[in-house]
Length: 357
Image (tube, rainbow, N blue to C red; front, side, top):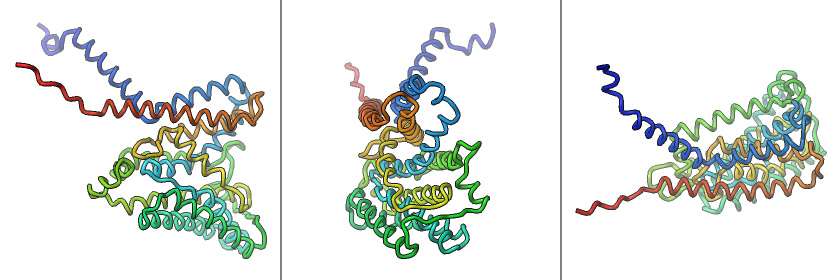
């Protein structure tokens, strides 16, 4: 008798085990936070592929929404982490133009080397993030209120200091070829180089959230702040670090914009406030915190960018884009709530009644 036939289970048992494993795998996929955002991305892409035609599917068509997604995505990733931790950061709308103006004034108006301007712009973002985090943990005020205050404060400082230092609300910036190539150039004349930075940010943030203790801490903080603190998690330091990460990424995007467009203006960046929140919510992150994934945030960012730019490749009035985004946001929230409820019900312990003797 063959030894393999002795050790192997009957064919019927194998089939049942295989079927059970496939069901479990499918169930796990359905309950993941990014499932709803993936469905939304596929539907949106198919819709605009049909009505946008070959122009939307061309390289320039892909570049139009990928460039938007890259800039928005670098900001949406830390905003997503903050929302998973139960916070919001509205100040990014002022940090972006403030950092653009910082590098333009330091290296454009006063002529300091570009590395000095870059460090100054990024330091500004870190400083604003630190102030946000420190105020949130020390005052225990809602982050919405704190960052709304810093939004207006930084905007006022940017406008006032720009007029005093440069005498204008727009400042030119000339970059050297290497800096331009790294931070503000185009690949093949269509795709912004910031796309590569977005990919790097995806991998870095994805590693933090999915493969380190800090990711568990962020999820725990959003789930229950008091329990997280009692469990020994340094919640205050974690909150400050998350806000500093948000400020740093916003400053990085502002800096790249100044290098790309050879100058800066004080009025840029406001649209990123709600666009980033919309992208994160579409990606499966809930406003109450404790639930979300980096993959979902990336998919949500791509979905938003496709809707934002895809409307121009169709025969529809571009004014309908806001309506589509509003409907998409509502549908995403409903889908995300459904999948989250499924995940919670699946994770709940099942108590089996004791057998009667």
